[in-house]
Length: 195
Image (cartoon, rainbow, N blue to C red; front, side):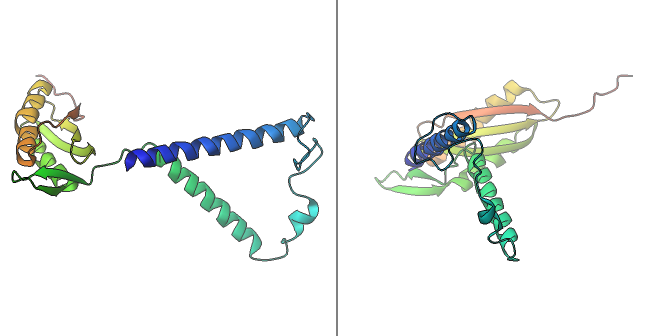
């Protein structure tokens, strides 16, 4: 489903970009007094987007300018939301779990994320953990961010994460593998004074 939405999104973005390039190029061509198609509403640099009559048609109505500003504000907010949505990675809502009897159960993604976060945060030297599930329902992947205490060893933290928290998650869900991307960062702290 996400692949289809991604393709539709790319097609819509491509069409919107193509439309903006064509319209912008035609307006620029008209402004530079270059030849434009006969159907184009602006044919030269002296043409205007809206005539004086069109601009003043609703001027005396008290609802006109607030409606125009609200509509343009809504368009800007929708465009901003769409732009920011391009950078957001989809989180996995559920994971298929093999029950061992030929059937499958569904585990909520948030529940598995919460358990992984609790296991990872319980490690020695980990101040905080954040987990996000991605991938497909039958083949999930994890992104884990660990905030380490100043005295913690990154190598030890990764070893314990893979041998305990991730091993527990793989065992409990019956997954053969759970690919993980781990990002480690240290807590900001002041340097200790040495006497």
